[in-house]
Length: 450
Image (tube, rainbow, N blue to C red; front, side):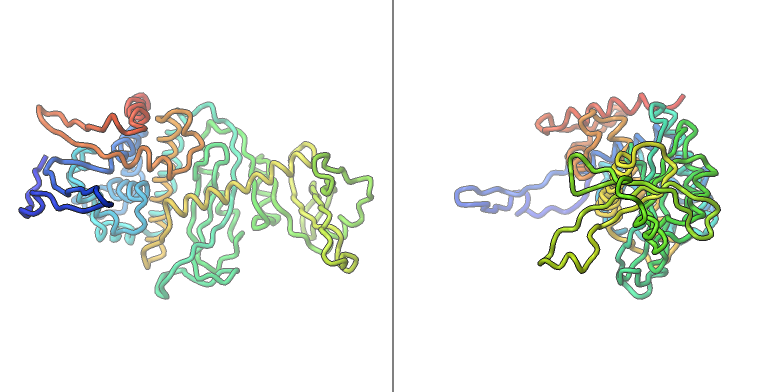
């Protein structure tokens, strides 16, 4: 390991005093011992190697025209690691690149600098993006060869208006709610929190635009171990093509329905005895009907929830008495139970919020395709964090937020010592969660294939 060769002032060698509060002064000194605060990336990179991710990326994606320089996997893993550490911008890669102790631990002579990483992202075209998608599918198959207990998925599909700034950012436009944005489209697995599929779209895209091609590409990533699919979505996916696709694939679905005038008329014609009151909330009632929208080939099961509106100044007689919520489904079961299960898709908004805040707070490049690549790298970083949580850490982390994982495991200060052809990573026994880190360290080798 290279020793630090920097001039240190005499003042700093003596220690620069700083009074924290009355009677409590601390002296700032300096050490040339190699140290890192990115200790969690040692497990992050080891997890990637255990699942064979570098090999999958290099075999699947051909972007570089020359053999020299970093392979594709190094660019992608560096951007994923930057997202894991909470890096909001490409420039944040410099913190990893300048961490010599970290590079010694993860076995990298260098980490791509921000300019090189940005240039790598800008080299992608539609074909290479499909290669990246196929690589993510292959990674899921590797992971699920070790996660055989999960055989059924509930997939929540939703779009996100992602505000951006700068008139020259390709694809940016004013969305349906007036925000200047790009619009990622996401598919999350409810049981595991994994981000299965992500696609970047222009800001003025209809939330449900090109939904079937999105679902078709998403389907290719589903591992063979997952036998049952239940798709949930808001009204963005309420259209005949999506319903037909789900039926062709044998998927269950619940999708929020647009309350068109003919559908509302059919609901209003339901007799009072068709409604079943919620025993815990008397103001809510449930019913169902068979309804065939115009130009649809057949009728479907529609579930309806109505709730008595609160009185407002005695004027309720002038307005409709009930508020309605309607979904279309091919599932079997009681209306109330199915609608409550559909309501659980609200957790997808929490997942999107967490992914956006912690891994993709910024789409940093002007080129549309480059931002899409950046999104996929963040997706890989997010999923690797989840797999670290689920495969390597104690069960108490299973539902933990990423911020907790990053704080407890990602940022542990450590010394890095080398000698006798060995590298030692020395963490403090005073760290409250050091045993969790040790458990992850010991768990990673058990995940390696072959």
